[in-house]
Amino acid sequence: MLFQVRMDVHLPVEMPAEQANQIKAVEKAYSQDLQRQGKWRHIWRITGQYSNISIFDVESNEELHNILQGLPLYPYMDIEVMALNRHPSSIREDDR
Image 1 (cartoon, rainbow, N blue to C red):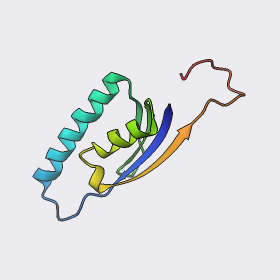
Image 2 (image 1 turned 90 degrees about the vertical axis):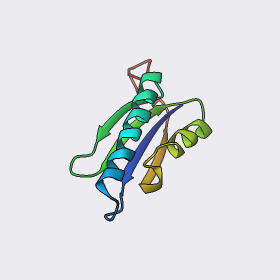
Image 3 (image 1 turned 180 degrees about the vertical axis):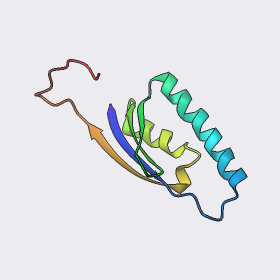
Image 4 (image 1 turned 120 degrees about the horizontal axis):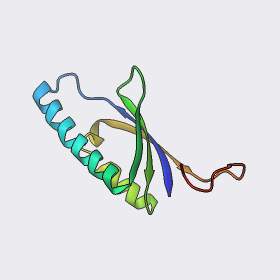
């Protein structure tokens, strides 16, 4: 199942830089592992924002939910999820 996920991060202004950097480092490792597994297919930064648009390829809504809740930055995020389905007018037979 393919999902488009928008993640907007809102770290507290009062969070110490060292703590923020530690969370970001763990987040990066977590996301790169999911990318290597093929579950986190694409990630794009939204210019001028601390936000991204990502494409996930997972088995179920529950798997995506668990992945997102496992993000170290999850407590500081607003997340919007959209399920994706192949369009009947697509000229592609795969998800490239």
